[in-house]
Amino acid sequence: MLVRKSYESLFKTISHSHRDMTNRGWVITGTPGIGKSFFKFPLMLWLIKEMSAAQIIVQVEGRRYQFKPGADVMEGSELDFEPELDKATTWWIVDMAKAYVRIAPTVLLSSPNKKNYGEFAKAPGVTMLYLGLWT
Image (spheres, rainbow, N blue to C red):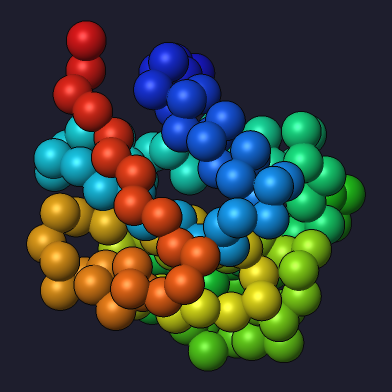
């Protein structure tokens, strides 16, 4: 798997601001086709290995997937796993859908269209990050 250096930089930014308790949400945006959606795969690995995430809820196209180390992946609708999003040990990765502030640290992967991330980005403790062009 090719892991861009910029993915590592994004993860370090997220992990440091999470550990410092300065952030609980991040919007990652950039040019369409730049690799925002793919970023969720190394991000999930790093969250489990380096940050000991108890579980990760990934939301993509109206579906949610629950990943727990050592357990089967569970699939549900965009309304399933709601109680899990109220746990600080859960991470919520939202790919091209609406995100809102929950107790779970949240990473929103979004197109640069502000209508897709605007309300979430205005919340306290949410930081905008940009995935740059391939170099």
